[in-house]
Image 1 (spheres, rainbow, N blue to C red):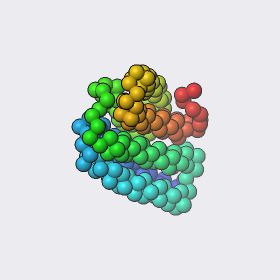
Image 2 (image 1 turned 90 degrees about the vertical axis):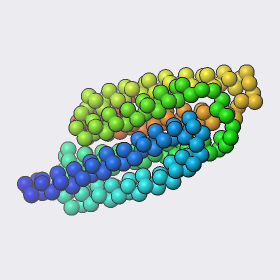
Image 3 (image 1 turned 180 degrees about the vertical axis):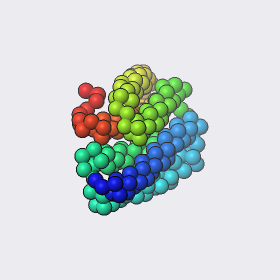
Image 4 (image 1 turned 45 degrees about the vertical axis):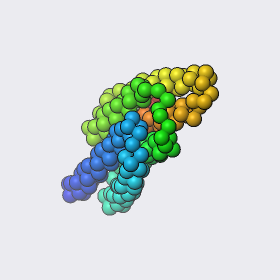
Amino acid sequence: MSEGLRAAYDHEYARVQDQILRLGSLVEEAIRRALECLQKRDRSLAQAVIDDDQAVNELRFEIEEECLALIATQQPIASDLRAVVAAMNIIVEIERMGDYATGIAKTVILMGDEPLLKPLIDIPKMTRLARDMLRTCLKAFIDGDVESARGVAAQDDEMDRLYRAVFDELVEIMAHKPASVSRATYLLWCAHNLERIGDRVTNIAERVVFMSTGDMKELNL
């Protein structure tokens, strides 16, 4: 790649990176607000989370178009091409995380005026972990930090442990209090969405490793 093409590619790819960080920030905030509306049973905030997902979707497609234009105009090869392909995969994963946050908000609306079945303990922990994993993984993407990406993937084990704790507790409650099934199911849906966010972050970590090393494999087997 000539010096001029190199400079053009670097400029355009830096813009893609900035846009991905913006997308990640929008989704991280959506995750935070989803927990808040669940804790407060705030249906107005829940609807705002749902409405704001449109901006996430639009930005995802905007970044995808920029990536396609970058491939068409700069014709990157080797590690540069891997970086653009990784970026295109990463934005899909982030957009899906936004859908999971929206899913929690929709559950809050479905719950109506029913009180929470139990105090929220592990679900807030899952939310904090999901946000931390996303932030760390996107930094690893920007820095090309393979070890940090692998570390984020390892955190998904803790996410799975928390989800299992929520699942087991709620199943136990349902077994002894059949009337609580609907309220327990709402919380299970929320916990499941957070667990899936952890899986999506792990997918991003795998793309960071691929981008930097060319090695594509599952990190959590």
